[in-house]
Length: 240
Image (cartoon, helix red, strand yellow):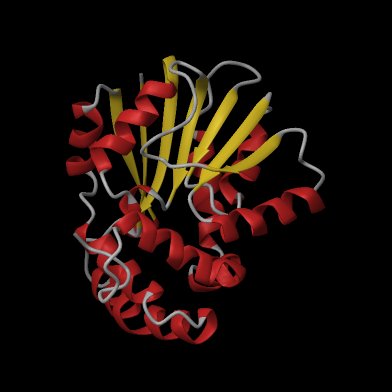
């Protein structure tokens, strides 16, 4: 199993929490800088796939981090958005952001495990995840939990990195992910492992049709994916 810290004997979940705690204060800057701001467009498109769900929905944002996707989801006019994450430092940064924007009445961020979601079944109208599912220790368990807490006919929207296939995007992407991103990430975040782990986790992630099969396996229907930016990322959507 791929983990961020090769010499650390703790499990993947604990290591991922440690990694995000280490880079939390620089995470938003690096996200926007390293993606040239395209990640903001990706998030808006991800939320757009939830159009048509119940009016004033109750939403769950899994692996919410600093809350960027939860904030983007405000365009759905939700009654409530709850974001969960295992990294306390990421949540701390997110709570500061939400307080500054005066959104505490709508968005709540709290510590939570994506593979053991502490909400009753059939509770949420929609579930979202941005750049989180590839960090699950047990992908099937994480997806099963998302399915469980979703209401019948509710929708999920998952944004995740993928691997471009066409020339020359594939070659440029591979060079950037393997050489530029780890170097810049290391210099800015001061964490030697975090941005080396990122490209490796993307490489090992079961993307596109393989990920659709994982969604179907836990019960989701009407599963599909949309490639973004020449295949650098993909949006996966499905219904319960």
